[in-house]
Length: 219
Image (cartoon, rainbow, N blue to C red):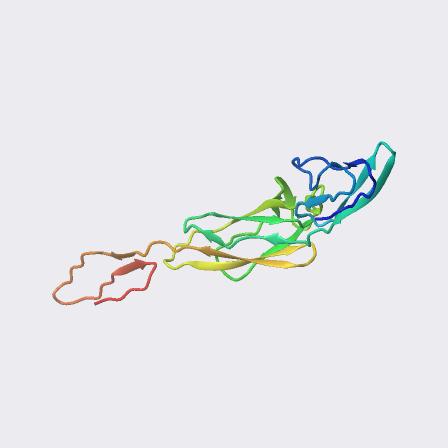
């Protein structure tokens, strides 16, 4: 918020801003008045990295008078936000949506684990394809945050227990963000083969095969 006091004994108007419209980050109220007055300024959050500013003019036509003031707003430091990811047991792709204002994602790397497959060289940012290590076309994060997604192949989890793996995302500044990926386990199962076993009277060695994805015992 900001204020401006007009000490002239006449009507005045404000130029350089418009009533609230989509895409307008600064609004002023009122846009006209008379005698002394206070202008209330409201700015939307600046999600881009770059600062922004706007010059405003307070003027009157009779007599012809004017004064100027500039409103500046700081930019938001580089960031990337992503939630923890939960993956279905039969999934073949992990989709990792994010919001960011970075100029580029330098790289991604996978920690120990067996969920993720071969890491891709590209991702999606602001609705367009992007390559790791390459500045995004038009650098949309300079002026506003944008949405993106990393899509990475993964393998199904045949085990009954859930498993996790950490993905590290490195931004242009060198800052890193870690994403924990959790994949649910398959339903527990035990199968024996054969299910019916006949032994000769003299005795002999036989085997029963156990196929399972969980711990088991025999009694």
